[in-house]
Every structure is written in C-alpha cells, then in structure tokens.
Length: 367
Ligand SMILES: *Cc1c(COP(=O)(O)O)cnc(C)c1O
Image 1 (cartoon, rainbow, N blue to C red):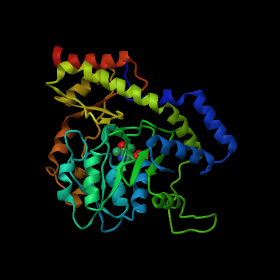
Image 2: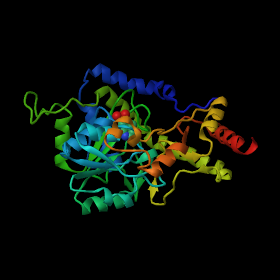
Image 3: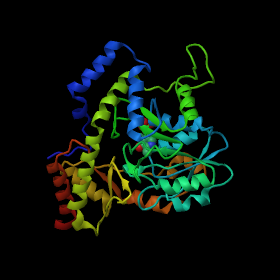
Image 4: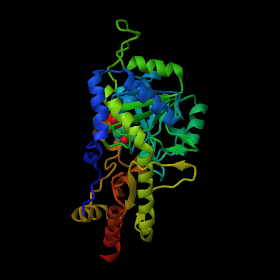
C-alpha cells in the first residue's frame, strides 16, 4: 500500500473544477472583477469577519496587513520561532524586527511569556495558529489591549478553526491566510487572503494590493501589485464549497490516529486537545522517540511523513546576525527534534490510516 503525504493530482483532476476555470477564461476577466469580489464575500462570511481582501500569497497577506497597520523600520513584532519561515520573513520585509517568544506544549506562542518581550518598540503580536490549532487568542487579545498593540493572526494553516466559537482571523486587527497548494483551502498557484473588521484597514489594503490606485489614473500612495488572479479566485471559490467536508474528513482522520495509537502513549506525544477550540488539522503532528528511524521505516512501507519544521526560525542563518542563538527557545528546540507530521489529507481512506497506525505500532512494539 502507498500512503502519499498529499494528493493534489486527485483534487485538480476534477472536471467540475475545470468548468469553473473555463468559464473564467472565457469571460477574459483576469484581474480583480466579480470572481475576486465573490470569493472575498464568501470568505469573509466563512470567517465571520466584516471584510476579506484577496492578495497573491500568504506572505503578502502578512506583509500588507502590517503595512496597513503602519508597522515598519524601528518597530518590533512578536511572533513564534517554530513557524513556516514566511511569518518572520514578512516582518523583516516591512523593515521591522521579529522578536521571538517560545511556544507552549501546544506548539503555539506561550502567552505567559509575552509581557516580558514587550518594550517601547513593540508594535504588534503575530500569533501563528500552527498545525491548524488556534493559539490562545483570548489571552493574547487581553495582553495586546492592555499594551495597545496590534494583533496580526497568521492563520495560514488554520482556515475554519475556531476558539471559543469564533473563527481564527476574526480575533485580531487582521487575519492572514494562504491559498498555497499545500493548505487546506488551496488553489493552483500562489494566493492569500486577509480578514479584518476595521473599515479603514480594509480600504488601505485594497489600495495597497493594487499599486495604490484609487481610480484608473490616480494613486492615493505608492503601493504594490499583490492581487489574487481572477482564475485562481474562481478555483478558491470552488474550494470553499468543499471546505467544510475537507475539514471534517481531516478531523475524522486525526481522531482515528488518536484512538489507534493510544497503546503507544509512552513513545508518542499526541496533538493538543483543548475543550474550547476546534482545530482543522492542516498537519497531524506527533512527537516521537527515534524519529529518523521511524520515518525510514514508514518510507520502506510506502508511507510518506514530513517534519514541520526541522529548523526553528531563530536558528536560520540571518537570525544569527540578529543575535539569536541555540538555547534561546528550549521548548521549540526540543519539539523540533521530535516532531513528525503524518499524512492526514482528505483523500486518504480509513484503510490507509489504519495501515499507518499498524506500521507505527509494529515499529515500536513488535520490533
Ligand atoms: C504557508 C504559510 C505561510 C505563507 O504562505 P504563502 O502563501 O506560501 O506565502 C505563512 N505562514 C504559515 C504559518 C504558513 O504555513
């Protein structure tokens, strides 16, 4: 049996999807227009946000949100060191400095460590809802309000996840999502979305993504070209129709793993469970003993697994020059050595999940 980590080919070989693409191509409306606005309306509704602004990547969603919030040179933005590189990369792109704060056992920024990282340069907090599991937004929002800081949620992995019955992306000043092919809501290329409840941020973002143009010939300020293509917006809108089902399938797969691997609690740390939140399992991450040997064993059995992410951001070369060192964030560093992501995508069958479970059991018990 083969268990691929992802099955994009299956998703994109769908004639119903091609129909949507064809329709869009025939209309020859490629930049902005109705397809983009319709997707934005649907996405805002899904997140329970006032506005959604479609842009050309998750990185740009983060970057433009910070630009709209006037974050730049001389400012500091607090974020987690265990994310995909784009969280910190977007901060650096604005001219601001990323200030890392260690994560808790749930892989998300530890709110108890936030206050000691805040100083007069701090402008914002950027929690990352890693693996699709919401960060502690109630506590983060309290701290941000108290210190008058903006909150930019990196929700790239967590579309549709909720905490205290509110969607991620609807808590902070801006919520930033990615439509990259690897994400739960994905398109055939790069794309991103920003959600916000603030009318002035919505307006600024619409200008920022489109050269600053307020009409055909006049700009309000110099901006960027960061629009979501209309063809991709049609694909994204098609994806939205299936997102509830995709999400519930991923949750069912996670449940199967949780139950099937229970006998191994001595060698496996399971994904965190919190009664007030509903994660969406962008990744199903466990911590294991003998990780490299396990991954090789699974590979021999036809099972793909990945590591998200093997090198914490603060240990990347450019962060050395910012003064970060090994040992700065012990929880993140300890997790990075033991985490492994098992396949959890929506096209897996129950038999495939059970096959993965049985092979992991065989590795730890029967060997
Ligand atoms: C994927 C991802 C991004 C970046 O999204 P792109 O669309 O690839 O630019 C940012 N943050 C996190 C946590 C991600 O997983």
